[in-house]
Length: 277
Image 1: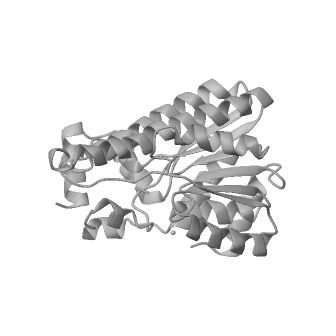
Image 2: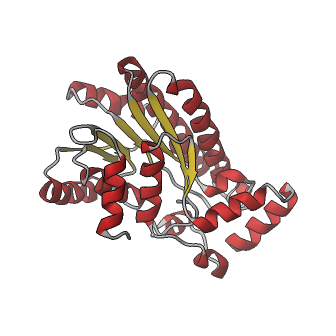
């Protein structure tokens, strides 16, 4: 799973990212949700962008708006990253355009809600392809370039659900556990080569996730819901500070801390109650 901010908050994030003007960021999943927020926040810092997602029209609309507001260069790449080999094709396309990626925001992903055995396995494997395989391949392709240059930043969007087993989100939560573990390990591996890797763990966020996943929103979950802007801000702030990971929002941090005090059987039961039937 993946709150809006005032101008003062945006400025504080801008000021915390070193050398932002003139850099270029690749944002996956840039046609909606958190991807829009990452694009707005980075463009406000004069970071040039590559927007990548399946749907070209909303990205072109976003690109036109951000060019007008912030006078930045934006390239739109319409690509289905859930397709095998898509990450390599995206890398080749950007290499052909001689575009250097300084900041990689691995945001693309989606969830599936429902009993594992009642969900078509093709839908689950497509989700795994996007949430895990494409993310890994993009981190490898662009991470190698960053390491060779001795600088770069990679933000991986995981989830609060990465921290415990989640009935009816079994495969999705497991993919996000991979992202979090993978990102924290890369943080240690690549820091010696000047590359910062940060994993962002959002809780329930107003991004359209529930509709896409076919998931109900319980009253408890509605109380815990954040707007997407503060979530994106927390991720970029943690990236600029060189943190290994960050959980967005005070209440989500409370939830995460409580996991340390409870057995996994209780965690499963709690998440089943919070997320609904």
